[in-house]
Length: 193
Image (cartoon, rainbow, N blue to C red; front, side):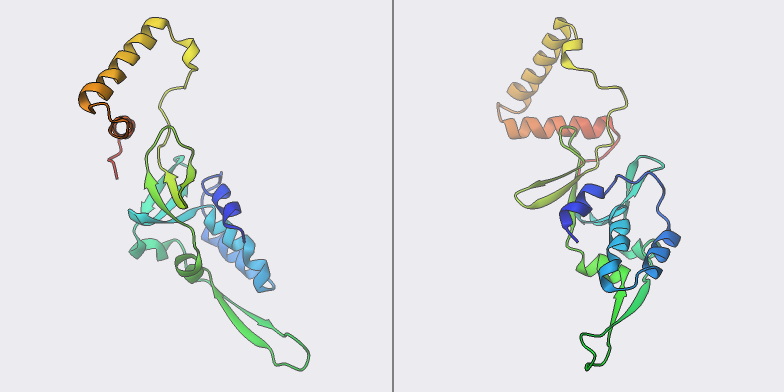
């Protein structure tokens, strides 16, 4: 299963996560190759996170993510096991393989992200191979094109950001960008990670 496919599906679910659906998807599989649907289902709701340590769960009902500590993840991702038997040829005995969805998600799943809050970035993105989950929930107002604002509004905002860049950040763009992200996090009620 391609990690790119899984990444693009995370957070797009419209219905709440259901352990019963996961159980049904696993029960319906006939071979280890068919388990992809169950993997995709679980990866559309959950993603491992190294900072803060744990798992982020997509919550379509609140249109946001919930951080779950690793010690509590077994409440949502049950250790559902399915046994498969495969025979490579008629002369060989059957080979028994067990698949545990919880074990696969925690130990074999290679998708691990770092949580960040950045209003300018998409939901999931990569920088130098590191996967980031943007937990910025969006603005509480409708975004309008810059052209819709009057010239005096543009000038006032330019003065504010020039002051931040010049006085607070001493002309350092990296610090200015941090302050902008801090404002975005503060405006949405989040602490910076």
